[in-house]
Length: 143
Image 1 (tube, rainbow, N blue to C red):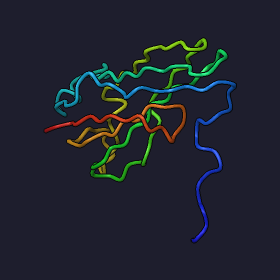
Image 2: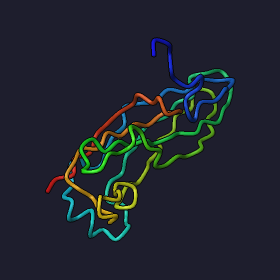
Image 3: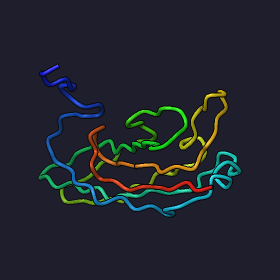
């Protein structure tokens, strides 16, 4: 109880000969009606983008990971849930813009009646190189 109880290495963490930096994520829409999300029929309705830069002196490959958290669902949700990832190769000093698409499949969950649904809520969205990513934005699903 009084000892550190976290993993030695976070999920997605790995060694590299270089370092990467992330810009603040941008989102195509900060608010979306739940009815539009449900009616989207699996098509993406929101795009989240981030710039990733190799700040080291050698070329490297980074796995850019997108995590979400549903902050007020009617059923308890994970603290961070991996929803997408992309592998990107960058030369020293090179920067690339990476985009992830989110739709009903990524933002829905199973409610107490075991029906896949979306409810009005706020999603916290993180993008980074591991589950401890700090680059954050949010999406509001409204009535």
